[in-house]
Length: 390
Image (tube, rainbow, N blue to C red; front, side, top):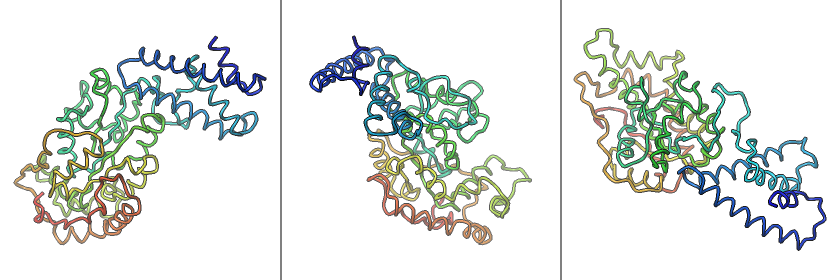
């Protein structure tokens, strides 16, 4: 009976009167609603809206594909597209045609093919992208302690992989594909804690192309994705990173000075890490696939001065209150810690970032983010470490 009504509703050429067709629509709507309720009752313990979002996204995706396809019979008129939309919707609910749930992207990918559908993959809906040495550990520890679900480390993984999955920035892990990534978060679904799933890997900032490639294959996950970044004055961030590395090399005669480090990284030779502090380049790539209102840009200087305000911004952005206070930013003592930038290093590094910083201010001013974001974005303070004792 249902299939007869489906055929009648999907066929624009049948001669049923308008009144009878309207009755069929009402009856079919009731049948469809009943089917949704039955489907929701049989689904695993995940958010029903998540599954219905998959249905809507998949059906619209096929309709959009048809609009762009010049080989579709009858062109791309509203009637034709509307008819195909109904067929796709009916096909999904009553026939479960796998064509409506395939990943969006059809271009070649370096990743292994995804065997599971979107419905089965537990993917993060919160990405904390960095920047490294800009307070990401403090913020992610607060959110994790407050209940946001983090990754699970597997045998052989270092302990910090429970916070930092390093999927997009490690070639060998990225090549493992979507199922490998989703397995790290499957426990969030199994334990009923999938409202917010976070990957807080601060090295992701320079891997926007991979993040775009990945999430564009899963339009429902992309539609629910939010991202956060904390920006810190680039030279101070570089010095903090140098001090972090030097703490593991205390007593080694081969360890280089910060001036040598700056020359090695920014002295003109190609070096991938030299791009991290050019924040505007990464943000421009990010907003090509993630709407600006789902990207929260935080100031490291505000976090240092007014942690409560920064917490408020994060809670408003994520739409949930989190208990506890923001822990003190990483301040491990190192007897060999360099606390100020020498004129030599300043002279080398300042020209590298001057124009990019100005471009960043202009970009953020011209592309405002979510309402709770600080605006205008504050200009970076002096990079001299004596000022902020970082």
